[in-house]
Length: 203
Ligand code: BEZ
Image 1 (cartoon, rainbow, N blue to C red):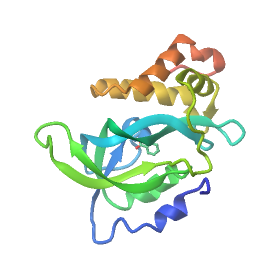
Image 2 (tube, rainbow, N blue to C red):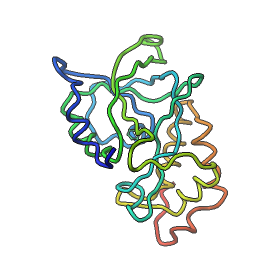
Image 3 (spheres, helix red, strand yellow):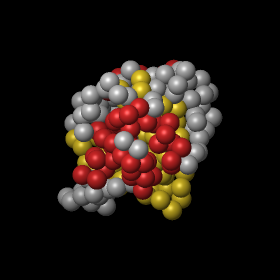
């Protein structure tokens, strides 16, 4: 599959007859909310786990030196907590562009986790980059992933900012993720500011 998934996503029939739809965010959609939404609720999905296994050529790296960003991999015993946004279909023009580097829209069942909607289900959409996309990097040790992230940056900023902001957002939600937390710990321990000596620190 090509890097640019916009055309594949445009061809999907996700919106016929709908004025709104739920979108489940598990990564940058949690901490970079640059789109309008009607409602947001904490939610979980079953059978998926976060992994920094997707290359980023357009946001947190470059084609010559890709960064690493999140995707989800199938993990039958795991639960992934994130944020569900109720959005109008026009929002996907922006999001399909933002997430064009290998991500496809899929349908998913999500469960809301806070009162008064706790336990209720909704069907919605999610962006996932699978192993057959051209930007896929795949598994590596968390230490090696952190080393690659520490030296990567792209048009959207430093790759380590992406990890540290997400880790903080997940902690704020009471939903710490072991994979994200381990990589964030490696980054803090190695004081990654040395990799980008001229950049301003925001955290
Ligand atoms: C998300 O936060 O749901 C997301 C992460 C990476 C790419 C697309 C969406």
